[in-house]
Amino acid sequence: MKKAAARPRAIAKKKPAKVVARKKIPAKRAAKKPAGQFIQLPIICDADTLRTLVRKKAVRVVDVRKAEDYDAGHIPTAVSLPLARLLEDDRPERVIQLLQEFGVAERMPVVIYDNTFGALAARVAWTFQYVGHSNTALLEMTFKQWQELGLEVEVRPNSFKRTAHPLAIKSEMYADAQYVEAAQSQQGKLLVDSRERLNFLTEHIPTARNIPYTMLGAGGNILRKSDELKRMIENRGIAQDSEIITYCGSVGTLSGLAYYALKLAGYNNVKLYPKSFKEWKSLGKPKDEFKEANYWDLSAE
Image (tube, rainbow, N blue to C red):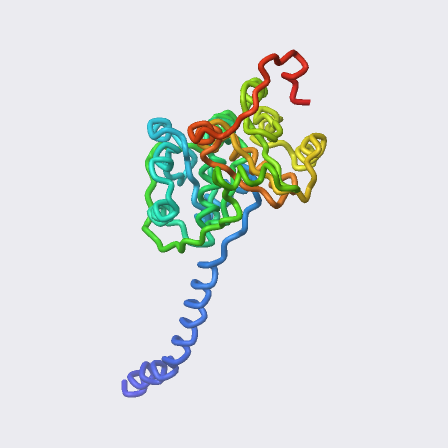
């Protein structure tokens, strides 16, 4: 019996505590490593990439439709940010608070979608990038198209733990009325009006060229392919090295889409005049009008 009792004690001595400790250290390091690793998204995010990121919980999806539309169904993990809520107070400090509220870390990919051919999503995306969240993309399609493809939809609302996010304003993306007025007489700078042709012909900011928003999307995508956009823009005599300021009718939605179309086409020096023609007129600034537009004037080509 004495020999039998001695064996368990001998076995216990062979279990070194240090070996267990060594195994735990690499495990902790491995857990920390992926935490800050986020992919940098292009201007347009395709559906397959978004679905993969959602499964990995490595993206924040933002639905900018009305709250009731979000409640009826949305892309999995999406948070709700109706455009109207953003525009209530779009001061940079307030926008950063929204990003923090949605748990958006500084380098986290953000994908934004709407049901309005990308225009509302573009305005929100531009705003996020303007305040310093560069890793922001537009979903290639609308929510309706997402549904028609039979892709995943959920109805439960989503919320995330608040996180810190720095404010880093990108002033090179923004133009106000004063800047637009000065640009009219400066070589190498030009204005692009993204409203429909008839609205443009009725009245517009002097010197502006017209690229209607209706020409930016094709084939079920909110924006055409980059080479198609580049060819269309170059055909309007807009040089690649120009500084371009986009505007539309009121709050920068249509011109936000034009902003990203220009970026996708390889035009790097682009600004948005978010208050657009509505503010321009309210300030009593000069405007051009075509009072006798004919059929050919209505063509954007």
